[in-house]
Image (cartoon, rainbow, N blue to C red; front, side):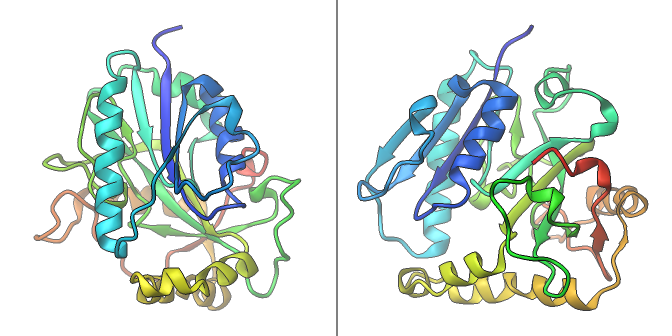
Length: 278
């Protein structure tokens, strides 16, 4: 069976993703191996909080960048305490879901329990959004990927969220401090922050978010809707290998341990084999 695998995240002001995060990773790794920090004593716990290790902590009212750094440090420090009990520890945002390609015919747990020769690994990032013309509001009773057909292949979500030893993540889990990265050929990280346009726009209008530095960030994020509407989607499988090759070797000089942005259109049609997974 091998050692278990753990997943860690933190959440605040969420009524949309937390229960799905618990259900998905609980099915993959066992609910007893999930660790979720609830950011704020005023927060309502997710419905499935009692099934996992759930910690409610006092909220600090910090600007976005500083808050991201503090969160990454807290989760990195906590992940250190989980070794050597676990074979691997994953850290991610609550709207991010790691998937092994169904072509492998392996569970995510079985895949990650293989003997990796690196200290961490990245998945290829797919930023999924609601197509403005062709897709309706999300139905939480159905899988996301049966309702969303398109994504942007994204350097921002090509993250080293899988660790095989105690490491230090940078802000947003976009890099491992002092370490290079390698993108695994069979792992995908689906980011669902904009999976439902009405929900994301309603959350973006919250005055607290705007006052702590989220306005520009959200403006950049919402460009995804325009890209989905106006770009012709490419075949996902044909684009994935090309994207991995570029992202594995190309980076900015000042950001050597993160992939550089892809050049050119990067909207793809998600292969049908992923429909039932999340």
